[in-house]
Length: 332
Image (cartoon, rainbow, N blue to C red):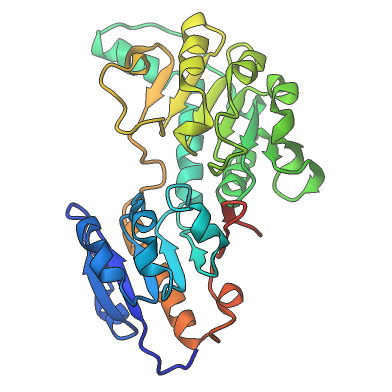
């Protein structure tokens, strides 16, 4: 693409989400059309680029006929792209990129915090403090525990490195089984999850949501988990059969669950998960540290500069964080 080209970039935002801090710099590189979901159809006419600052929007599928002839690149300001991908987009020449890298370390820290909070019984202590109860208890030595990280992308690797740093024995679970992995050592196949999951004290879900991973943690897998094990889900709620999870907690088969994501969000007020002992709930916030939107904005700027300098036929090898649309995630 010629360096003097001035592409049309549609910036899909939301009324309750502040714009990126670097709009002035972006505006020097593209003709930016700002819109919310209601105005997306008009904004997409003749557009080259779509940036989903409102990263859960499904508006593109409803306006594909307007966009398909001109659109060349879609950037999603999130690590997961499951809310975006649809058949026509997957089979098209449009390049999709995501926000890989921004959330790796924050989510890893959140996972470590969740494990430590459970092992050191901090949730129980808060309850006793609230009731003015002094009760001595023994805690778990985290450095003697094991963890299975389901999802071996950038976030999963950051989790593995941080858990290993405090002495946790870590194994990975991914699409293909292998040994000698630099971060996990051994990686088991997610298709064999039920055969291996019973060996681990902690099971962390961070896999992308794809047809292959949806409901991968079902009643059979939950039933195969180690007695008293801790399930941490920072991936997508749909990775787990939520009703089977409720049954596993209620029966005592599962020792604890730290849940940051759910089937439907916000979590319904009448969900039994709110009041279940051993369940910790957070509002899909594991990666959202202070300044995270600035990091997302920086990624847009970097890729927009690359887009301006790229050859028209070579976007996929020029842009950063290109998603394999058939698989639904960035491959390394």
